[in-house]
Image (cartoon, rainbow, N blue to C red; front, side):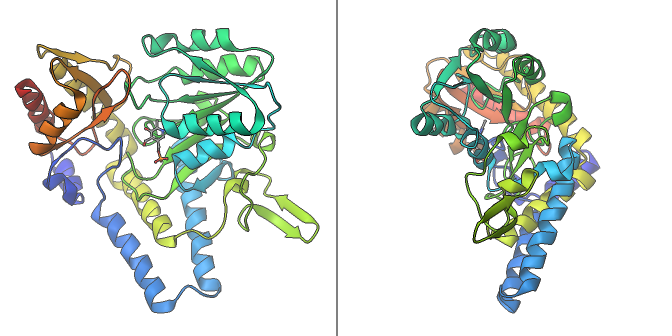
Length: 380
Ligand SMILES: Cc1ncc(COP(=O)(O)O)c(C=O)c1O
């Protein structure tokens, strides 16, 4: 095995207890991230959490995170909010627009609950209409399907970058172009694209992009990123208001930050921030984003090709994909197939309608691991 891969894999003990093919849910935790979190917890244990030094450390870590995240996404640090998860970001935008009854949001039938449920909440609260673009069978035609659903009442298109169900990479840039011609905002659920493929939010042209900590970048749970473009940020009101939301306040009212920081809230666990900071540093400096994206793509391609050759296996992931591959095995329910794989030490997961098994190829996986998966699926 290549020296770099060997040394990266040494950082990830979870790889040695299983064939780890479920970064799409949560990535394996590197020693470095674990150590950074422990160090921060030990500081809290020894010195307490009162007084300015603790809050200074929290502020410093958030600033550092905005630096890493803005470099990863190609935007300004002031366009980044550190959130608690991808779903947090989807809620902050979906619930924060100035919705009037009868306004419309467009989404698709490939979305995760993290993107869909905030729209349902907006519908209950504000009486909006949700239009569902049926793109499951032809994700490459998503822009056309969505174009036909836009009306003068459309305010928001909320769409995954990579579908958690089929792994399809959706044509977000094209969708943003169409949306903006009609004055519609675009919110992207980046849970399966952040740190899996090269994402430049300015090139995509989206207004908002939400991503996680715990998936492809191997950070901790309980942290995420929200990009809000400076041009669009004023169109979203704050849903949660807390001391980090505001520039200043007094008894008469508050002045939210003029940028994405308005989406940050109150006190957070500093150890989680320290873990995310370490994960991003490791990914950017030691792993190397371009190298990681190349490996994720190659391994996904390898898996896709190998699985597609097996009799009785139907791969649902289109050729235009990132790191998720979904497939069905004739005569086996996804649950039964997943259980058998787990018994053989291979971690995958099932996905809902149309149903299937999903694997995620991390930059740290080996070709031999993918071959082991293919062999195990052949045995099903
Ligand atoms: C497309 C998509 N959106 C949202 C989520 C939820 O992510 P988070 O746990 O960061 O909120 C996931 C994965 O769990 C996902 O795959």
